[in-house]
Image 1 (cartoon, rainbow, N blue to C red):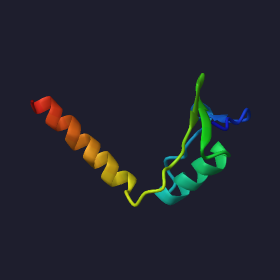
Image 2 (cartoon, rainbow, N blue to C red):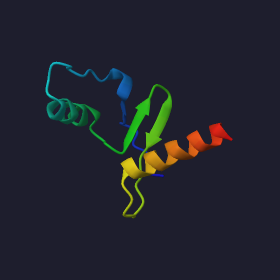
Image 3 (cartoon, helix red, strand yellow):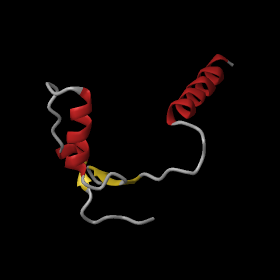
Length: 73
């Protein structure tokens, strides 16, 4: 894992809720600096994507359905 010692703690980021969504996203990305490496308090987070045709939305939907099915058993 390639950790960045200068990773931004996302608890320090402030989002202007009066901005349109696209500008809020851009503002967040500008503040976080290293989009794949950041911290949440004392936890370092590294995001990495695999090479696949699946979208995040479809993966989350499948996960949610799996959890729902397990709770119905």
